[in-house]
Image (cartoon, rainbow, N blue to C red; front, top):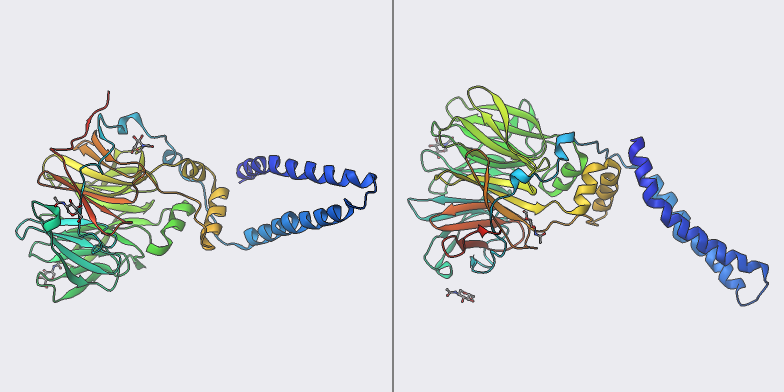
Length: 409
Ligand SMILES: *[C@@H]1O[C@H](CO)[C@@H](O)[C@H](O)[C@H]1NC(C)=O
Ligand SMILES: *[C@@H]1O[C@H](CO)[C@@H](O)[C@H](O)[C@H]1NC(C)=O
Ligand SMILES: *[C@@H]1O[C@H](CO)[C@@H](O)[C@H](O)[C@H]1NC(C)=O
């Protein structure tokens, strides 16, 4: 804490010096009584009092009263973007050649799941709708259908063994929607007596067990920024076994547990922690965690296996300079959180990307288009990469054969 206060005051010092010198230069004029400057002096002193001293006092009082109490992140959250996470192939202009699906009809389609048999994409929107979109040769021919409204905020989507649609709903919990869309059942919304606050992503194993994440048991989806800023781990990796109906916490104390995927041999999960900029493996039988990829150049959201030897990790934003600073200093995060409470957003989100990695976490290719942001998922269907996002009213797709990532060097 000491360390933070000193860095904070060193930031303030030059500002104070500047104000003081202004103050002195004005008051010095007092020695020469000049009627025209008198009101200026009076005005300036009062001005200084009301523009600096009072706001400063109010800020100090507000600061002390505010109960938000961020802490230091563990050291490994601060590792710089590793060379090992830089892919050899890049397409940094993916909007060139991109097609837009369901424009105006898909509000913030966060996750995408492809149902092969029906050739339909399922996606969850911010208005609570799980929508179905037909996949066509031309994106403009896609038809969007309002399928089921969960009454919450559907995020992660996966298909159960019997044609049902499993939804990780940020507000409701883990849902089971029958294949005809007529019945929605809550499977689970708590583990170890602690309710989920932000159920985020889900994957279904071949044996029917559901693996999913609760990003935070403390902050809901509208407050997620505070989870980022607080620096404490409220996320969990959880399983639900439909035969026993038991909800089991597999890994706790995660820093915003987000996307989850299963290895093709079904031995382990790969899950991402957004705040830590890393994804880890969880070996199911051994109950063991191991780093998969760390030092990512951005904050990972969903991770999807493509059935063909690759995972696709969506990075919702690059690590901007303000974020970098905020990660280091809890005090700065407190100020940012206070500003956020008053509706002032000080942290920018920009330059999102989708990173393709192999089964060992080695980066292969990256797709981005600066400053396009808020990409939440990258799903490969046929030759196309489909992008979900939290900002637009459409899904983007890119033909990877026509617009591949290329060697930059
Ligand atoms: C799809 O529709 C958009 C907007 O109406 C249009 O600009 C674009 O040319 C169309 N693409 C094709 C392949 O028809
Ligand atoms: C989901 O509900 C259907 C009935 O609508 C049931 O057949 C299926 O087993 C359920 N799936 C899970 C994972 O509980
Ligand atoms: C955008 O982010 C990627 C990494 O995800 C990085 O390689 C690239 O340089 C960034 N582009 C800009 C313009 O900052």
